[in-house]
Image (cartoon, rainbow, N blue to C red; front, side):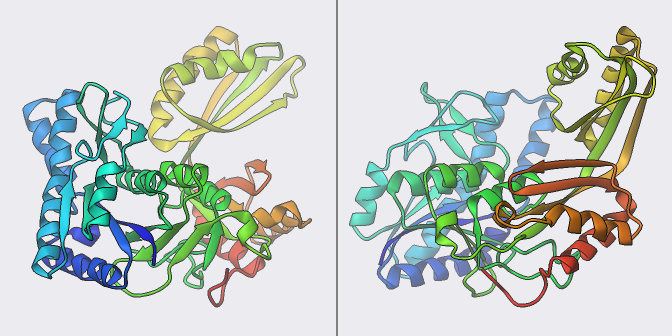
Length: 409
C-alpha cells in the first residue's frame, strides 16, 4: 500500500470511453488500498484546436490570454474523469493547477514550477478520495493562470509526486515502456525493465520521445521513482530509477537518434582568441540552440574551420546569420547541410567498459557509413551521418551491441 501519482496523456483520455477505462484502472489501484492522485492532459487534439481558435482571432495571441484559453482543455478532462469515478462508486474530487497551488514563475506559455502546497491534496487522500489534478498548468504569484509548455503534464505529475513524497510516479502513454531504440526503425528492439535517470535524460535529449526532458530532470533531482506504462495494455512498463539500484550495468542501454539536425561550417576563419564567440554569439542572440561543435586548424595558415549543428527548423535563420558573420570575420566560405542525422549510444556501463567507441566506429565503417562529426560524454557517444544512413546505422549498431532479444533490466 502506498501513495501513487498517475499521469494520463491526451490519447489516454481522447474520448468518453477511454476516460471510463482510465477510471476503471484508477479504481483498481484505489481498491487495492493505495492512495491515488491522477494528473491528466487535455483530450487528444484539444490543445491544437484551442490554439487554432486563438489564431483565428489574433495572429500572435497574447501569451497571458492564451494560457487562460489553453488551461480549459485540462479542466474538461478532470471534471469528466471525476464524474466517471463517482459513477463507479469511487469518491473523487477535481482540482485545477491553481486550486492545488501549483506556484510557477510568470513566463506565460513556458512557466516553471516553483512550489506546490500539498495540504489540500493530502486532506482529500486521507478522506479516502481520489484526487484528479489538471496537468500542464499553475498560477504565478499574482494569481495569473500559467501553462508549462511542451510536456507540461508530465512535469506536473512528477512535481506533485515530489511534493507529496509519493512512492512512485506512473506515466501512462501509448507505448508500454522504454525500448532499446525505436521499434519502428528496429523491429528487434526490446523493452527495458529498468533504466537510470542519467540514461533516460540522455535518451530524451537525443531524440527519444517517450518522456519530456523536464519531467526526467525533476524526477532525478527530487528522487521520485518514475515508471512508464501503457494505457491500453497491462504490464510492468519500464522503471526509471537510480544507478545504485541497478546491480549490473549493461555496456549500452539504448540507441537514440534525431532526424531534426542541420550542420553549418564556416571555412577559413582567422585563428585568434574570441573567434568562437564572434561566430556563436549572434546565433545565441537569435535564440537558436547549438548542439555539437568542432573546430579544426585549416590547411590555410593562421585560419581555422568551425562547424556546429542546430535544429533543422533553425537552419535557414542560422545560415543567414552565419553568412553575415563570415563576411565580418573575412572568412573564406560558409557551407550548410540539412540532410544529416544524429545517432547516439547511451549507457552508464560506458564508465566501466572499454572499446565502445571503436566498436561503434568499426560497425559503421563496415556498412560504408561515413562519420561527419563525433561528440562524447561520460555515458554517451553521438555521431552525425548522412540522413540516408539513419535506419541502416541504427539497426547495425543495435545488432553489434547485442541489444535485441528478450526484455532486460
